[in-house]
Image 1 (cartoon, rainbow, N blue to C red):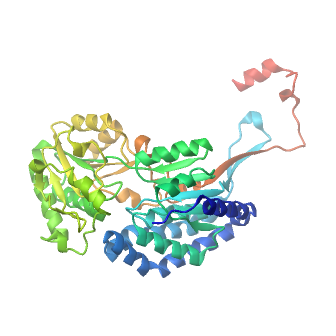
Image 2 (cartoon, rainbow, N blue to C red; image 1 turned 90 degrees about the vertical axis):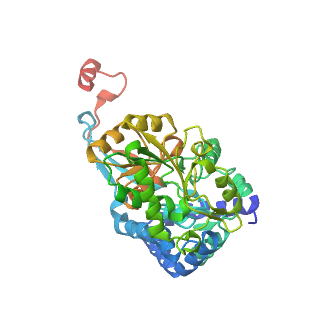
Length: 459
């Protein structure tokens, strides 16, 4: 994909700054109108978006709708329904010593935002945060991934047709364009991608003291305890791992299974895969492809043939990789050293739950954590670990609740979005104290008369 020049970037950014300074985007009615326009555009472009996702990732229309399009339209609907309430100033209580003053929080847009999306959910992860930017009243520059060029072109067409470029615009390109973008000072940067590239964005943002939200990834563990419902666990793990062929930042990256149920669980996961996708996965129209040959080669290097329990087949030119379960994996194996981001599921065992939680706590903090077992044990696991989010007896589903904040912790990211948290992500929460003039207490002024009395009162 052709890179965008620094001159074009500078011109688009300046036009957005001028438009933001007109204060038009601060009107709640204006924001609601733009959210409605975005929803209408997504519905109008649904078929084009589905075809583009099929071309770049071979996603079925069903998966494209469920994991990308409906997520965005649902987010927009949630913002339209709640925006007036979110934007109301919030009164706060006032300490006795500040009376008769009053305090409130008002919400104002941060300004011109940059949203940089990855390739794995190229539509959802660009337009979902855009809903938050519109809701907060920001102007926005959108930067799609060059690794899904068909989707990127459709998104640019959609934005160009429905929005003025001084309000929302798309800038295309790869690494060079990102480097040029980061030379400029934005009012907010929202980045979704790997921890490695996230550090680059955070470092560049620090030069301008720009606030950032980094939605990253990492190795999200999935624990299956001895008292888990294995039939349910197997089906939900297989589903969560294989949506988008495992190219999901919150996919179960590896399994920690109680030794007593491991063999039965792995057989049931294999059966669940076959039940969903058929005996010949290659022919299933519901099984996506790996994004490119480079990613295929990386994934292929992570599969030790001696550890294969199920799968292992790969066709680099077709970008096809069969769901692959790796048994008897060791923590030092290459597959345990990096986020997999593909349909490979390494399995390790434990005899006592503390072995599982100790291992998780020795690693970087994950974006998600999944536990299959009983409620009491689940509570103990949550108390002994941390993650950005997670599920008990399920996978991925926490991302679908608009009322839950989504984001990472530590190496897996910083900041939250979805629903009201998206509105807050692009907003400045401004603290205001209002003080009447009919009373002006002299005790706060120099030379601080009655200081001993005031000191006792403030203790």
